[in-house]
Length: 113
Image (cartoon, rainbow, N blue to C red; front, side):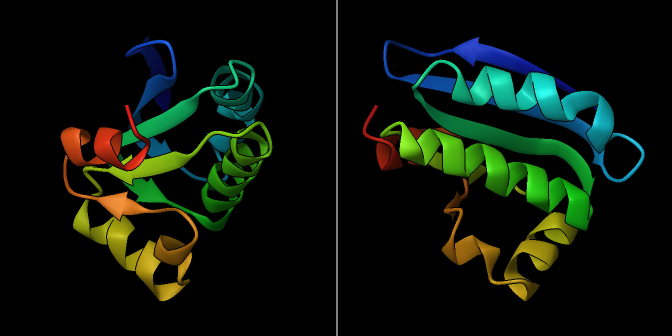
């Protein structure tokens, strides 16, 4: 699992997630990912096109990071979610908590960037 943070402007960052976010990998990315997403105080759009698998620990990480961003006045929107990952989000009704859209431009519009 790896991620990349890209500043898209003064109010929003893009986080590109690649690989598997599961019990094996979440420990190595939890602190840096949460810090990258939350520390800036900006909204975040998460590019999920390269995320192949999402476990319950990965879901917990995404929710935790989103909570911190929301507390600081930002929003988190997911885009490009692969079918298997989308099934997990839908089954757990997380798509109601973490908005999921198809494209980066839709995600940026959703956060008002």
